[in-house]
Length: 331
Image 1 (cartoon, rainbow, N blue to C red):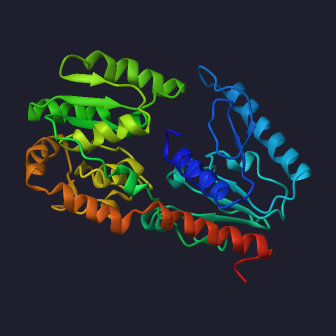
Image 2 (spheres, rainbow, N blue to C red):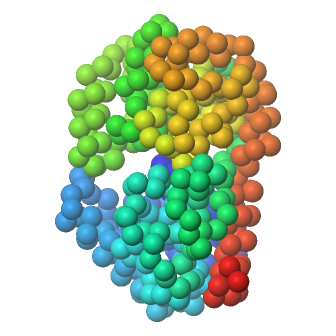
């Protein structure tokens, strides 16, 4: 699991299996699951419209086959294009919205569909959406806080970590680190979308060097090590982030976050406690030096109180029980 939606899905899959439930996961062949993987085929080297339609068709077929084969209680969708493979009306379905509203099809929230409900992952995301009777209270994301409490000595570098794409604004992180005269480590996955590949090749790769290194995608343990050792995490996001697992993970590791104040980031970052909210690259560079006065243990304490994964899982399990028990949980 790499992206936020994938991490949430993987956490729920593991929790369902741990509780003795059958978990059926519809995903690409490379996915690692605790439950049973219903594979849709390999992840392509590069996406295009034809491959996107093939993937949607594969999702529809796997969901349809699962509903025929097993007595499925609830279908939980996490994908951006969920509307293309929803089960037939009446099947209890929860759709978790992981992205800003303008990423979804315009008719996503206007269509009435029996048995289908939505939830957001932050208060700011829910406030940005049109009123919808099928919208349930938000369930904030969570992270495995205790697993992130490892201790590593702080080193003299800053970290930028996430999906490598234009909306993450990592070129601003490179500029801020250069202004602050501190090395930057950049990490994340470059998904095979044309604009993502182009952004990395044209905006980031030419600027890599001895003081700006690209680490690629990190597994959990390498991510924890780099997050814990970094002076701070830089998040110059260009879109209204609906949440940020990596910001929560950094804070749980005792590492402050410096971010632009977009979307849900002001809900996650407490200025002067767990990081700083800044308006531009110059302020980000100045904040890099200011994080030295913030306490790592205070960051960890905040994470234990505010971002526990167990709270998120309990919220979704509550929705699963209600959806499975009644055709309309709003009544």
